[in-house]
Image (cartoon, rainbow, N blue to C red; front, side):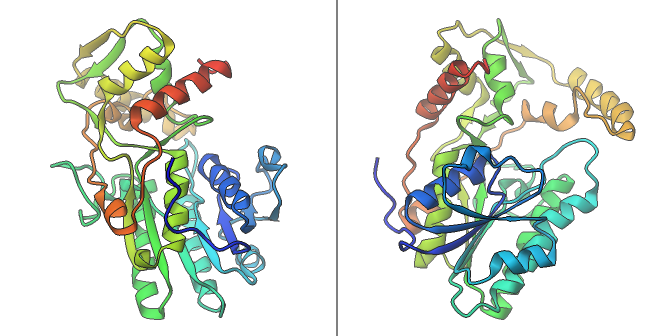
Length: 338
């Protein structure tokens, strides 16, 4: 596999937020292995055991707490801001705003006060573009966020673009597509579906889905921190092409040695059932067994033009969807998740 053309200098002082999460932990391991001096913010409840073999300076606290950010940012040269509040029942809107918007403001404002500071890498999401009516969409597509997660991510990114221009902050933005890889639980449901007797496909569309392997995503973040052409730019991080949900399921089933039997079903009964579930479950603060956004996952096309990061920065994906999905499937199987 080809190494990225630009990397951070040995001994670079890097702050990582969201370091104990799925993506953050992969990023931290890459940074430490490359010789960076890593500091990371972690909540008091975060499990740091998977990273205990690494030399990381941990700052315990909330990423939106001013004192925590002040301590964490001391003498930093780079920030890679990965922290995110993921969609879970019972999380108030203000929490999303604190984790996404308030933290970005605190980190960026503090970075401007550090003379040796070099680059702020903000990790957003392709979700800021919302529903893509005519895929594929590129980085210039308008922001049309559809839920509080996407709304606050878009708000944070919009604020950062304006603030950085006004204050001369060197920054880059990475918008990941759907993240997957060994250890991920968010897309595990798709792998489990492919392990069943039939694989449901809702509606009549292709249901294009754009993936990014977590290793490729972490590489893109480091490249965005190091490459001079990344300053002031936003990049969608994803595979060169989108895959249909049917192709994803077929690849997973093949890796498991199982027959693949897709079945097409009308989507409207599932949307109706999801609306009923959300209506009753959300006021009680419990996670609905079925919700509209999950049903939409099986009906919409989410395809992006990901050429910019390859053409501008020379980025090379290490994993094709076929190879990455197969390797992830084997990891799930070997660890008893499938």
